[in-house]
Length: 263
Image 1 (spheres, rainbow, N blue to C red):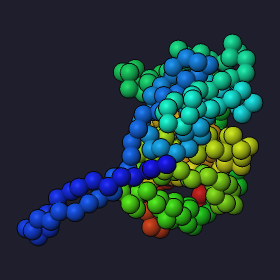
Image 2 (image 1 turned 90 degrees about the horizontal axis):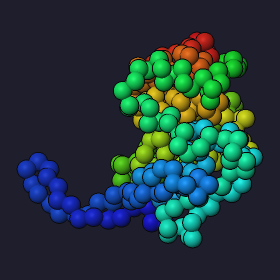
Image 3 (image 1 turned 30 degrees about the horizontal axis):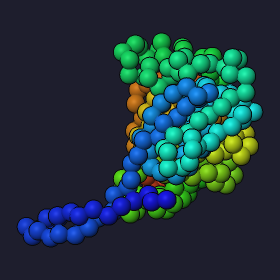
Image 4 (image 1 turned 180 degrees about the vertical axis):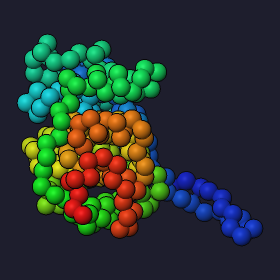
């Protein structure tokens, strides 16, 4: 499976022009069907499609646990760029038409209304033992070192989920920051490791949807290299998630619930 391709480019440096080739990451659409009904098209980096579809369905509330999946598979083959998710007892689960979580974040209604609407799907994060700031620094360095596609192209986001002892449970890269996190969540969901998920890290800003997905996965700390948005902070406050931004080198800014981070 090809993840990158070479393209011809012209560069300027110190007034001189040169022709060369650069790698760019491949971006393709993935159509996700749920119970044979079209749900969404995700623009993604090829690879981990089944984890991406599983994680997306979980974080969007279309399934609540691994046992809700009857099957997750490609329509025809991997080249079809189409995945079909079949659920057990779909009549007891939200329909595709009820999947409104991500779209609501930009539909013009107020942030407090969106957070109130999430009450039925999200649970408050429990209190856990303290996490050392050095753990977060080491994990973010690990995330950066693992981003091989980014090293080649400079064009992907990375996500990583770890346990309380900093053991890495899963890692993924994708052109979409939400996709990278959904791939990670889908991986630990389908391998039965969701209960061990404690720390999530992303190589991006911390938006509302990123926080929503982290809370849905039950992690206690979400850290990113950039800043959070106001709605991300509000959502993290409400559901007891420790939100860490600007995790760069040995520096970090803790926006919510700092009591989990050792002083």
